[in-house]
Amino acid sequence: MLAVMEKELRMFFRYPLRVVSSIIVGIVFLVQFIFFGQAVLGGRYSSMLAASTGMGDYPTYALIGYVLWWLFTSPIEAYIFGIRRELQRGTLEINMLAPLRTIKFLIGLSLGWILIDNVLMGVVFLFGVCLFKIPLSWGIILKAVPIFMLAFVAFLGFGMIFAGLVMLFKNIGALGQIFEFLVMFLSGVFFPLNVMPYWVRAVGNAIPLTHAINIVRGVFVGKSYAEMASSLQALLLLSTAYWLISYGIFRWAEKITRVVGYGGY
Amino acid sequence: MNAIEVRELKKSYPKKIPLPLRRVEWIEAVKGISFEVKKGELFGLLGPNGAGKTTTIKMLTTLLEPTGGEAKILGYDIKRDAREIRKRINLVAEGERTLYWRLSAYENLKYFSRIYYVPKNKEKGRIEELLKLVGLWERRNDLVMGFSRGMKQRLAIAKALINDPEVLFLDEPTLGLDVQSALFVREFIKKLVEEHKKTVLLTTHYMAEAEELCDRIAIIDHGKIIALDTPEGLKRMITDEDAVEIKVKDFAPSKLERSPFRMAVVKEDASTNMLLLRGQVVEEELPKLVEWLVRRGAKILSVEQKEPTLEDVFIKLTGRAIRD
Ligand SMILES: Nc1ncnc2c1ncn2[C@@H]1O[C@H](COP(=O)(O)OP(=O)(O)OP(=O)(O)O)[C@@H](O)[C@H]1O
Ligand SMILES: [Mg+2]
Image (tube, rainbow over all chains, first blue to last red; front, side, top):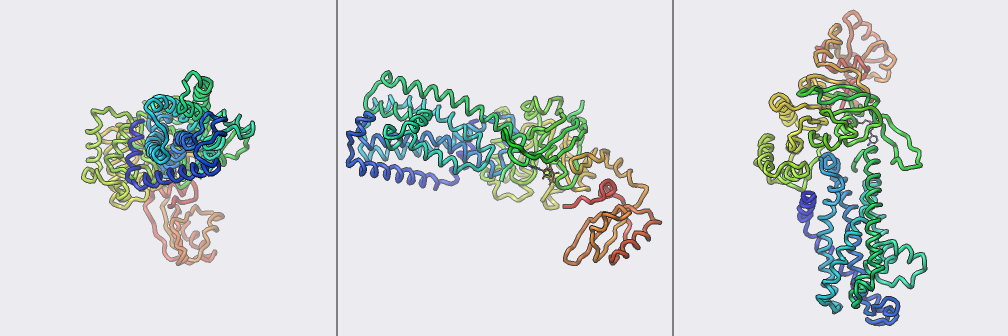
């Protein structure tokens, strides 16, 4: 599994320009949204936001949402583009031929990209912290890290649904991206969910990102884990559920792929 | 014990992804084939494009689920024991996209030795040995991207030996190679069987290659084995007659379908409107054949007698020639 990841990283760093462009796109996107949000709210602090979510500082609110959204989307992208690259290179089949288990191959394939992607995320986060003077303390960081890790495990399972889908339908990159942006609204990344109709909130609650964002925002305003127990429970539950669901989908996709042929482009 | 046992193996491809509740049509690619390959044997699957050679190899290497029938590799069932089989076999797949072009030769082999769980203490030695064996040791740190087609194929063969497989599958190993590289690959395959005692199953549509390399050959056409024997045995099917090659001009090959003679087009030159026909004709029949052709507007340019080859076996069995 580590070998698969190492090979991906090696090939990635033969094109270093991509790193720079990803960071710039990430920063531009974030800054744009925060300034837009502030313009709408008429300032950095919003009592409306504070009343509905418990966090009134919009840049902090948005930055947390954005960073977690990034963490959420990176496994999805990693699976989709990892497998697509293998299909385009025509090398998927020779990997399937080896005794290495397919699931390990896939996780190895995506971990390399996720690692790079999250380092980029870290850079954008720090940039955001400096630019908007986000109040950050070691206590908050230490308390947020376990949540990030828990969330990441959930996201990794969720993303694997897409691994199965790419194996079957090959070219679903666009679908993946539409989904990612949809989630931005469903999970309350830049806007509070309360302003959304009931059914949007219902769908949002089925996405692990929604709960992860809630918990981390809670950590930033000083809530204890116990106060957020229901969100934590939901995150754990969804994590388990999505691992099971996506593994099922993946096994099913693998079975059908072996009937159709791994093929390529 | 047999290294490979195949019984009534069948494969149909769906025309669309077979989702639940979706009606799909199926194309029969392999229609029930049976054969055995003994340990240490070099066995060939010979057939024209689309005969089902690659499909057969993919089923035997556990990459494709068969539609019917069964097969055993080294006693393991291809459906149930895929992982056991994968540890003990390897494949040189068709085409040149079977390696990572953005990695060096060395990095490629290192990667594959990891996913084949080659013991760490053997890894370095094995990679070095293999790179030297295929003559790429000096180029080990160059990216595969810059390699010639022949070098890529040699590296693909080295990769296929990384787990020291007992059974090696080669799909059209010399397709698209220059003469010199093809020669190297053929000699190398012979060496694998003779010196390293490997069992090899290869596919090809080159008659001469099959004849030169294989202990036994199965001729496969439209998903069926139509003959299976040693090269000598196959040629014995036709020694009572001679092979004739006739060069003609201005003749529509479709007319051959209703001819009483088993002749096939082996070469076609559209720009000069010339055809090279080949088939078996006993000497007394030859004038009749020429007359038959002339009456259908053909201009005869030359008539030559030839030593029978495997090509003639195929023509005799199918009325067609194997062509690129
Ligand atoms: N993935 C696939 N989906 C649908 N049909 C396929 C697929 N792969 C092969 N076929 C069809 O199955 C038949 C057998 O193909 P196969 O590739 O096994 O032939 P082959 O003997 O290897 O030919 P070639 O000399 O061209 O490599 C062909 O008619 C082909 O069109
Ligand atoms: Mg083929």
